[in-house]
Amino acid sequence: SQTIHQWPATLVQPVGSPLSLECTVEGTSNPNLYWYRQAAGRGLQLLFYSVGIGQISSEVPQNLSASRPQDRQFILSSKKLLLSDSGFYLCAWSGDRNTEAFFGQGTRLTVV
Amino acid sequence: AQSVAQPEDQVNVAEGNPLTVKCTYSVSGNPYLFWYVQYPNRGLQFLLKYITGDNLVKGSYGFEAEFNKSQTSFHLKKPSALVSDSALYFCAVRPYGSTSGTYKYIFGTGTRLKVLA
Image (cartoon, rainbow over all chains, first blue to last red; front, side):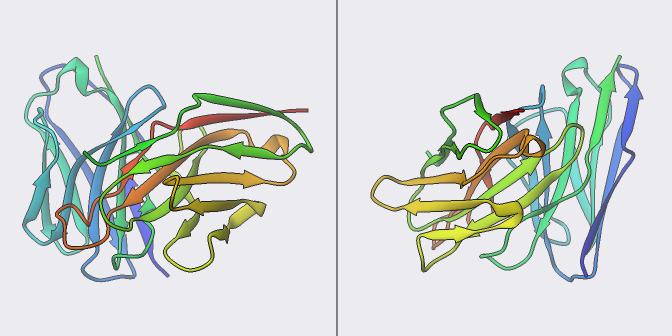
């Protein structure tokens, strides 16, 4: 069966520090991969999605970047964190067009 | 622009009563439709989906949803609510067809369901 791993679960980082969040999927090949941010426990904002290795689509201009160095690995990064980067970050994957997306357990990022 | 609307920030219902959480969408073509549930500090869990066929779809934990093409709605329902159903519920759509963005899931802003004992 397929599983998605996202870590760390919580992270407290100072302003100006770098960020690296990692997400990996097991049990499937060539998944579509997504990074979402959820602010204040409400709506989800799509940050990036990827349909293949090295193929990254950015949805909103921001202080973050994403990379997909391997088929089932998706990384969210920042060179210098801002206070406004705080939030709950969710990684997700999907298969064929008519399937649902499956989410990781999320990372609570607090920038101080 | 493609969008999903969940008009109610919060829905309160007494335990044992039926519940409805509303969702309407605006996308081109025939989208795929989904409902998810989120518990505090957790990821989203899939509940059910509509792809094609019968307008009433059944999902996990006794939930069901009714697709109405003319009203572009996909309301979530349950005949008898439980206190344990209290959570944040998200409606989502995934556009289908030749338009760009068919890989994206567009989420509503979420509706907090509170089931009172």
